[in-house]
Image (cartoon, rainbow, N blue to C red; front, side, top):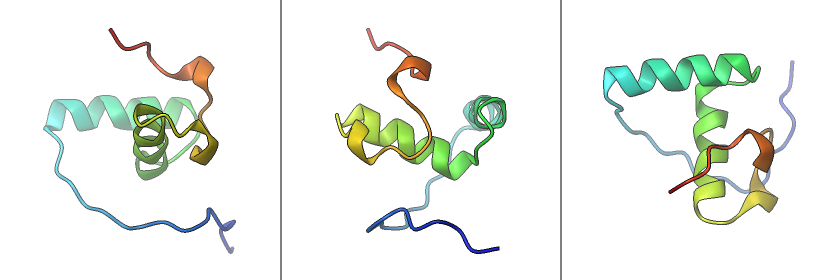
Length: 65
């Protein structure tokens, strides 16, 4: 099945510490999304670009200190 177009995006690759990856995997599953999309949305939020977030909204994002 075709995926919806999410706009102009650039693919990146990173390695997370295993403990962090495990937490991200759980958080993504709880929200019904992929690890990749969860990290993409968190990155958009970090840089103040909630307009580019696909699934998450501000209510589910942790508050930064």
